[in-house]
Image (cartoon, rainbow, N blue to C red; front, side, top):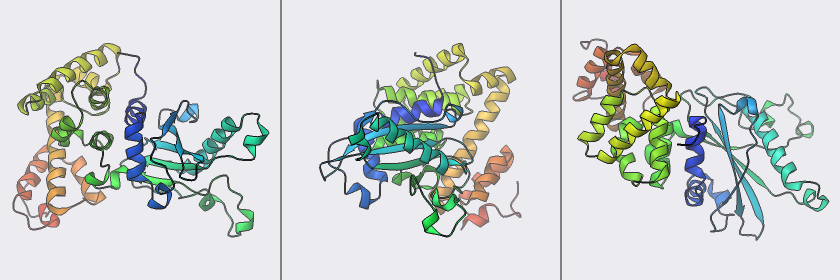
Length: 328
């Protein structure tokens, strides 16, 4: 296996570096007013990145060249924010990245400087905290006078993966599986992910690698779940990836689990699995969960989660599941 880099960057690039998936991403996530300007041809992935080296561990980017119905070209710049808490400086960073793209495009040619292509900025976020970043650089400038607000970029398009319904993530099954994985919900949707990523594909391996590197997983429990579900090929692939990651020291969660002992690792894995199962069952019955409920579940002890799992079966509404009068 090649040298492993930042797991978020690796999966993000694996998802969008394929022109077909990139085209589906643009179709699913650009506003109709913008998507209507794009020609049918798939985007061309432009090599290179523009993220500051100091932010490379928490941001990924991808530049695409797209054909417009007018016969000209434009760029779509996709910046993925991987922090669990959004960075309020992002609009400023995004503006600097767009300027770098234009500079590289223009080079030393005067003609190009007079005809810079449009750049459509898209921010993809999958962190746990709500998005509270200003929606444009203009919102960060301390003036109400538009004549004083000189901007390199007016704004950006935000796609908050955490805030979206599962079915709205993408009509492309492989993209949806990857976005579910970035949302830390892969274990709750194993069957869908297994069915969406064909055997033998690089993306199938990359999604599993991300789970093993980023999630706090009980390896034995995961393999048992895959085996029970009839996903024998996935089970074998998980074992191969885990062995490689442990050899290269890249799987912090697995290393920590080994250090603490298998018994503790299994207990943590089961508790996390039950918490994800509870969240999924609650969403199926009552719709998207409020942030305070998600936080409460994440901090709960295993016996309390067990009580809530029992309560889901007959509770008339979400509040009844968490009523203090229920036994814990």
